[in-house]
Length: 381
Ligand SMILES: Cc1ncc(COP(=O)(O)O)c(C=O)c1O
Image 1 (tube, rainbow, N blue to C red):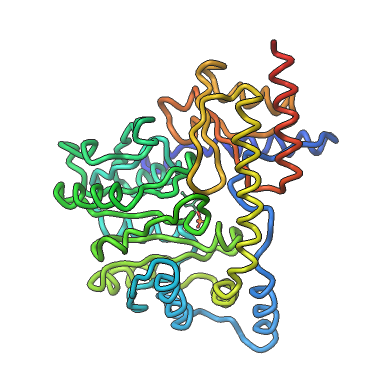
Image 2 (image 1 turned 90 degrees about the horizontal axis):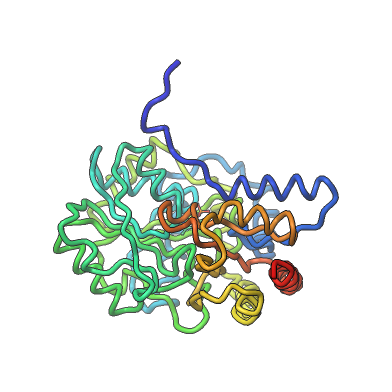
């Protein structure tokens, strides 16, 4: 039986690293995980308690496709609390993670073959999902002087039907401030490109508050998730805010593609929104870890790093150390017992000379990982 050409998407290299780390652990080695992009903490305790009660007396069948009305209302309130944006709950659509929102947004906005701009380095699945939907991902090679974020000039003459940005971004953790985001939104509009803002790392910010595209425009798709700030990766629940006149379009696609986001996860997510104090405790751990990384990585020999504004990653230029990030990461795993992600996942061109370090785990793990990296790098002479 033949496969479609659009199914020829690339594997996630970090998964190979995770598998190698798992095998090493199976063989009895102790590995420090700086490769995974998820908190080691679970869902907030309030969410678990509420779900426990719901399991007793709720059949947890399908919900309506747009999501539980109370959850949509509560998410809208978050925009008031976090950004002082008055958001109509009717515009909020609950999705199976932000990954589900990518499928919905790309399907609702673009026709086969349309060109969609994505920053490189960037989250790998944008490119692969676009390809799988028969769309054309257009890599925008971002510049270090722009903190590896796209700028208006990058869009000129690219014939883009859409532009996808993330702030804070994965793998760099850099953010677009109010002015930079506004300029990009204007430039996309001038080019006739729909603007999609991936805001999954909002809440995980260290110096300045992240800016939502909704502070600047209603003409954008804004995607977020319970995976990161709310520490609920496996629950597969996120959301998307769309312009009022797009709600029905997305609703029809969601009804057919997913029916709904998992009901149990929606119940837990609603309660999680009232557990911000617990989430702030996690944030304090990341902030400490970030400081340790910013001090420890240069000492270990990873000197070309930019301080991340948010998320829980440091992206390092290791061109002075290797031109093969995949085998360098394999060496770090084998010799230092530290798993990291080769940059090739995020940037197929320049990623051969970059690595991503995640600091989402416990502070003790980060201290141990940095000590191991320093020891190994010193031993290389
Ligand atoms: C930038 C970015 N967007 C989206 C996702 C996917 O998240 P979700 O669990 O909400 O599908 C990730 C996961 O790491 C990510 O880094």
